[in-house]
Image (cartoon, rainbow, N blue to C red; front, side, top):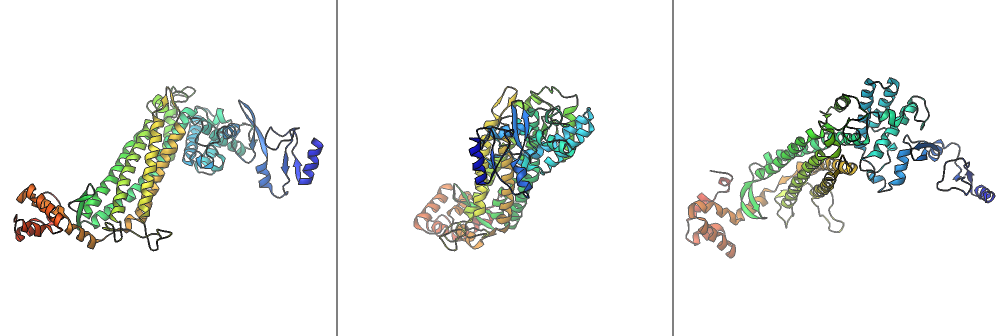
Length: 512
């Protein structure tokens, strides 16, 4: 059989990998040798990608790609959790947050006696992780152990091997930098992953979510002031109501976004509390007194955000109410943005057969079959984002409610959805602002026409002739297709002069 395989290999341009190569695996011969396509000698990068080194974990040996810094536990996770593919990988903000945490821990561990040479190498490698320079070395998906242990070990292995490389050692040797003994010193996945969750969430809120919402707030506020003197008909239950100004209508949107920012900021103090130092169950086993406080202070210095150590590590590991709270604030924000976007697209409906009170920016063709059609696409995008955020919050809520005894094991799913919501809301707010709100114009001709035709102006007559007579004027005018003024005079309830004096939209905009 081996002789036949050798002949087949020669005829097809294949070379034999020695039987001592690790296995079993795809493409193995019965004797344990694999067949590999011959590569031109100048394709060193491809050859590197096709080669492997042997690393081991407590379950045994595994082949690890030679051009990757991760190790055996990461490889084992890729074998055990083939769920979703590349799109379901752990969010990069979590990986970067881990880089920040591991650097801080190494710095503090050095204060407690870790060899400075090892600590410095860990810090340099961790900085590369935090800066996103090693993103290709984090292949694991969110759908793994609920504590995030595999991702913590993925980070430990990458930093360990990169530090070993910096010190001139052999990748996979775990010498002189061990992923557990040195990179993970005084740490557990149970406290490092929630710490990374909070760091990642806080950074995303400050870099994407809050700036986006503030930009939207400012644009809506500018429009509210621009439209302050445009009087229009109000609508309740989608039916005609009494007048208000377009500026007043927009001021409601401004306040909604202002409250959204306030709610999100109000949730942040709990996000700033870090679980680091709790280790396995919250007791702080295998740490030193002061470790937790020092790590939090280092993280705060590295990020510029006011992180502190969590006052109760048992809560910090077993429950993630802080993330549920933040997600809840974003869910409320999504409700606000859904209302705002829907109002604007309905007010801009038309251009000839809708309400048409607003003229929205025309950004792109709207139909593949109807020439000249333009759609309110920014409103549609924002409402879809709002719907997604509402769905994300359901998942976060379920995850947060499932902390069992000393550990919540829905951590990766929860942070995936929290980060997704923060980024979507922040980006969508900017897109909606720049491509819609900033260019909105008031169609004053249409606004005036609709207001003057509204039957609900009759409300101004209530104090003068009473509700019942005013109602009869409105119903009769609607039935006969006549104006309020003509109907009121015909019914003998008032004179033309009285109607003109009492029914003035500009006098109906607030309390007397």
